[in-house]
Length: 372
Image 1 (cartoon, rainbow, N blue to C red):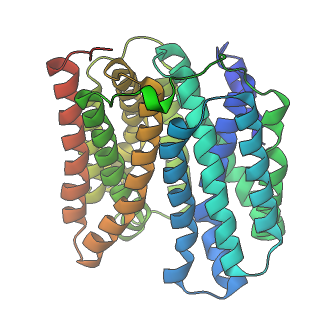
Image 2 (image 1 turned 45 degrees about the vertical axis):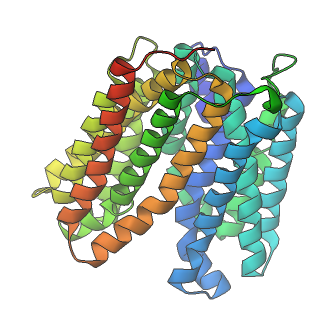
Image 3 (image 1 turned 60 degrees about the vertical axis):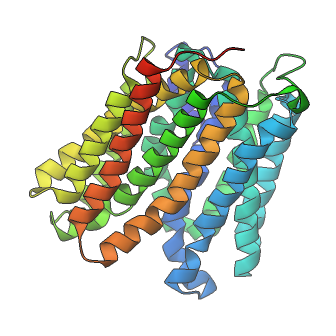
């Protein structure tokens, strides 16, 4: 299942180690599985809707902590890569077997930590290389297209236990081709003097981007059903198209100027999703969102690398802050939707994304590279 994206990427003559591509696909698959299993967990563990959401929250919390601290306390190595895969497999296997809800929640926290290490290792290995960053970035949308229908079949046949059992098995496959990292790795933490202000500004912008984007995107299905009359099948097709639209833009190997402009355009599309007066506008905006997001984010990563004194450390910071944004965003979106205003959701969510774009534009065209 997870090897399909890797084979597809192979046809593009990717320059990234197969193990890193496979681990990125596994990470995407695990995160993609979470919203799909939540309805089953309600019945399986007999918990309320307000409680079951903690499954996603603790997984993201583990991811945030791991991506933030990993570059500060460890060096990239094949050993760390294999260990993270083993821990992830153990967490998924345990999650498939346990009958206690809070033990299951604990497995998601452990899985989040392992996913954070794998994500840090993948992006650290390509940070600053636009071509290879595109190789990593494209795995997300490809895995998103492939995983959804496969997960649907597995869930219908065996439920969430089978799904996590499958994830446990495929989670070990990337360990068959572990990547090699340069000896010595990054500088030791005690030798670092702090990051560049421009780099921190870009990291903050990425946090605003994911906060605003997740606030709108998490409720796009509700908007599509309530305001546009889209069926569940239609919405699934739209989300698949959203993921597919990101494949060519994520894979693009050329220059990506004006990163902030693409982020701002994505913010405008988020506003359109929340306020669309017709179903075709909502569909068009969601599909275009997939394309512009995957133009802007890799371009912003390239800018972050160029403006950083310690790119490997900022790579971890970026992933941590973006994950934190995905935790806060749905809470913000829920508060706005509870007030009964999709328009307010569009203004606030889209506005945060446009603000992120403006910050990135200022950094790109108004602030030079830092001294090393």
